[in-house]
Image 1 (cartoon, rainbow, N blue to C red):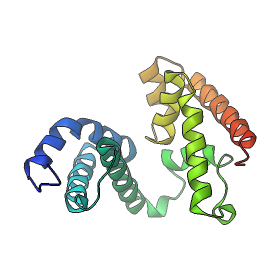
Image 2: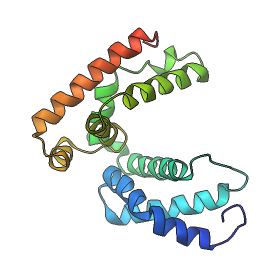
Image 3: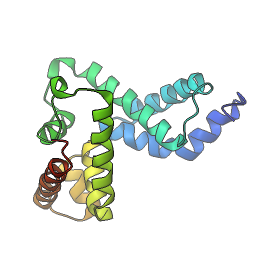
Image 4: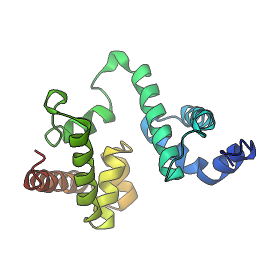
Length: 177
């Protein structure tokens, strides 16, 4: 529908993926109103991008667009509060896994790292994989994860710590760290 420039594509996309997109944006921004604006901005951005863009996985393309817009909106709103939110805490927890910008030699190495992380996550049980993704992709708090998965906050923290340590060992074994 997007390729044919059919305006119904926007309505169908909002109906089919709107709730998921708003959840991703709301987890980052903490506001239903901002999440709705991110969805609308994403729909406009995708409308302008397709064609010529031809995403293999439309849902993933849409969610990545929403996530990037939400992160940009969050950064703009919190420029003076660097390090004060869940995003900074979540990214700090992953810092020992990721090479610094000056050590990244090329886009190929970055893609190899992402592919290895994806392989590692696919090998995890669904609950652990979902915890990891909700924390480090969706920036959910420990309290939110504990409530969602029926765990104590401490158990969530310990589980995520164990996943990070095992992932670090896996990435070292793969020669990526």
